Length: 133
Image 1 (cartoon, rainbow, N blue to C red):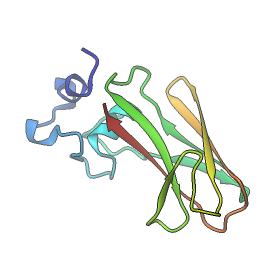
Image 2 (cartoon, one colour):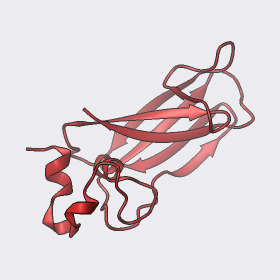
Image 3 (cartoon, rainbow, N blue to C red):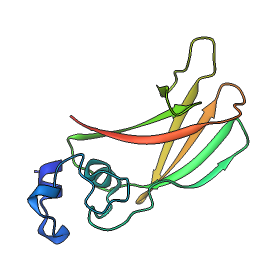
């Protein structure tokens, strides 16, 4: 089956079973195995994660790798923050404050994400996450 457990147990990765958990990070690149599976990157080798940030204060674009056949039990998502404490989902934000909408576009094994804020923000922190369904 095309699921996380079959992906992470691929002998080509050479991971000890104790390093195959969804939240484990055997290569210590700050990308847990679940995210590596969704990105399609090797969980035992350093991966850069997000890259190519460009912003004008309202619209920010960035890229990340994308598995061309991600495990069927994984769902990726994007979040944003003004302060690294309070995180908001796509299209939401603090009461009376800005909102940010994410628009991902995948070509091959690269996803380009456009994050559009409803108003200019002095700081904008972005992150990608994945959940196992």
